[in-house]
Length: 489
View 1 (cartoon, one colour):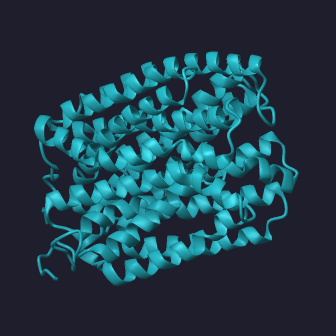
View 2 (cartoon, one colour; view 1 turned 60 degrees about the horizontal axis):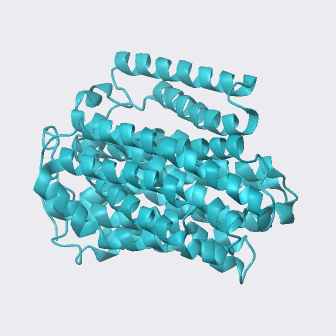
């Protein structure tokens, strides 16, 4: 099906079924970039033995990916809005798949860390574009909402399934195969995108020159901010390197804001944040990701160390999150239609804060109590993430949708870094800085449960304030909103 409307894509679809090829391809691209966030976490002990890496090296195996990923999202979105979203996505997929094959050449922890950083760069070129291209497939608002819901479920399933898939694979193959498998997935996604997504058109892109200084400053600010969180855990929050990183991040952020306000063609129009939808959605997304990352990081330690479960069993323990993501979709959509964006997101924020408060009680009351909290958390997560993702991207002008998606993903990545850092820091301070191998002693488990109670109690307050604060800035709209500039010439 084609359309000749000037500001519509060259190919739109009447239903999700009709768009199954491009939608499946975009979901695959989103899945592989999200699963890589957590896929290797379950294999860190094995990697440490094979490569002779210590705790610091293993921390960077996971941290290097999120550092480059989060630091380059805005830049990648800006480049895509200028040079073509489909074109940049195809390049990102090709680089991501090719780099994944290079893991067979890795012989040291340093080489693996460098490879993970490079994969984060390629993933940054994919993340904001996969979401924005979903909007290119459909003209109908309801179809866009449902397609975005599918994308979020697939992406977050990849994030949560990482430990399960990794643990299952490790029972049969070497850890390198956890990255090698990215190559065929990226290839399939490339084929689907080329077949089903309309080619970039000049009139759909911005003609403004690329804001190179803005790109450099944004990468510096976000990169140093992410590194500061990692450094705080590793070196201490008052160490020289951490304080210098924080100061550098603040200075770069101030310089970025000053430059963007003065630039004739800014990478990010800061005026967009005068919109309550944009501002509130970004803030609320930070809150959801703090909750998700905090729970994921904490419960991986809880199941494998405190309970002594195998990687496969620990991965299976996360299934309530996946199941709830699927079955909670009608509830999340009903909340949005019945009560509007603001109230629905406030309900979601209450679920997030309540689940974290419940975990602070339930961690030493068995898996049943934990599973119930996981279900409540996921209901809140689905509601807030779906509504905020659609509202934020749809509030952008048509030629800035990749930046909208990049803002959405950047907010989530920042939240993930904060959540992981908070949980890691509190557990290190309250329990132990070194994680013993094997099943923990009874005394250490009791201390760990106490540390978890304090940690999840703190997260409940932090997440509740951030997510609810963002929700209050949203509108009372009961449907997906269109930005008034979207159809402007």
